[in-house]
Amino acid sequence: MNDRVASEFLINAYTVALFYLLPLLVSGGQAAREAFTADLASFKLEPPKNFTVDIEHKKHFLAYRGSFYSEARVKGAGSSSPRSLGARS
Image (cartoon, rainbow, N blue to C red; front, side, top):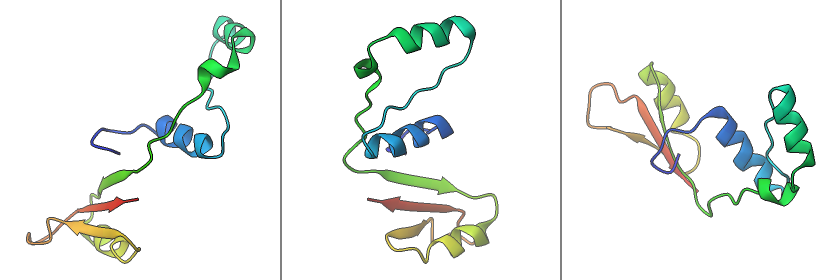
């Protein structure tokens, strides 16, 4: 996403940030105590205004199937089995 590998947490964090919620992941006892006593404004995440997403499939037909979504495009269309799909918002 936006020229970097995106973790599942980052994708979900951007999703909740679009709804003006705070993305928060707490693990461990001491971390939980510190997180809930911290200033919540420090957890605010500003999502990018635009997203560029590239998905590489193991099976080329999945990239082809996904290419029918609006704004999606198959990358490497000149090759015999393009496996990458890209989109921009």
